[in-house]
Amino acid sequence: INVTAPVKPVASFSASPTSGNAPLKVTFTDKSTGSPTSWKWSFGDGKTSTSKNPAYTYTKAGKYTVSLTVKNAAGTNTKTIKNYITVNAAPVKPVASFSASPTSGNAPLKVTFTDKSANSPTSWKWTFGDGKTSTSKSPAYTYSKAGKYTVSLTVKNAAGSSTKTIKNYIVANELKAPVAAFSAYPTSGKAPLKVQFTDKSSNTPTSWKWTFGDRTYSTAKSPVHKYSKAGKYTVSLTVKNAKGSNTKKMSNYITVKK
Image (cartoon, rainbow, N blue to C red; front, side, top):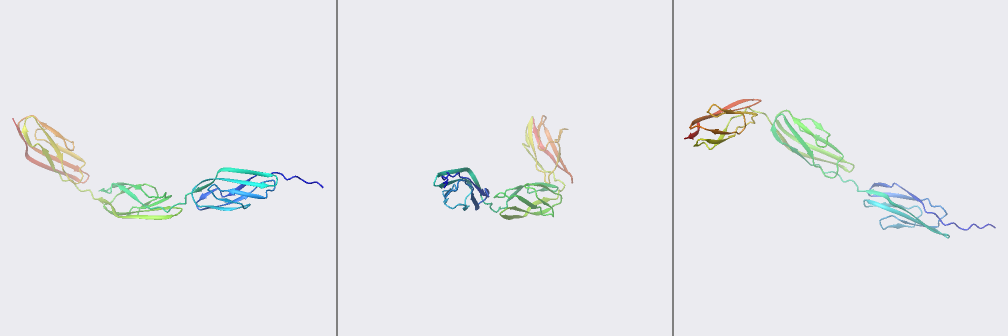
């Protein structure tokens, strides 16, 4: 009669899946050789099992080191695989949020929208309020016509979707011809007199022409001018934009004394 002495086992195992979102159910499969008669698994989170091929559910995100100790009459053996199981945090439904700059101005008005949604959305759908849409994360959009526009953003990820709508968020005004206005300081004093002129025109002028009454002029928006001789000076400002021009004249506005 030949009696074969028992052979010490050699631990080996596999698992499926080895990664995924929590809660993650993993099936472990014993692949040990040498005919073990007992098994002790440790799953890396403090929990254990003595089943041959256990299924185990990881409830928290993390990387887990798994070990299997097998025994028979000839001895024991342990196999450990470091960070074998990767459990990702379960996706959380996003919460839509956004901002825009500028939110008002003259048409055509270029607006930059910025996604501020929480919980890592993976897709975006903007509606700009004029029938146009975008799937960019943070798009720039030009409103060509005057009006008040309601903007909405729908964001999605694996856990769900969320929509944020802001009513009449963007106000695009129709450009009008400017109306000239200005002030000055000081308006009187001894020569040489340095005067700060300040443009106060409305409706967004794009060019300025000042005449200071002493045969000099400036195209600055708010110039500083030095009067070197005594006298009374009439000042005028002409402002322009794409819609037209306007002039404001103030007679004997600046008084320069000797």
